[in-house]
Image (cartoon, rainbow, N blue to C red):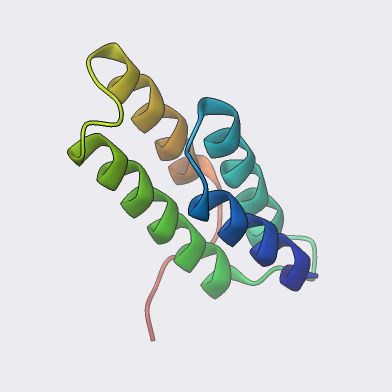
Length: 89
């Protein structure tokens, strides 16, 4: 069931990013892209792109600095370890 997860994901990205919120986004992407017969890989890929863009935007606008930037980026890049097809139609 992608709908509620996508709603939660979008709400998180509209707010201030924190380590915990980025970690929750990674978990939502994992759930949506999970190989459990109900996965939506295209949606998971789009969510991954949105998360990476949001993190980069926060870093670029200096909402994060120094080591915090690296830590936040590391959390967001954990999505690369999630196994699902990444392609665009």
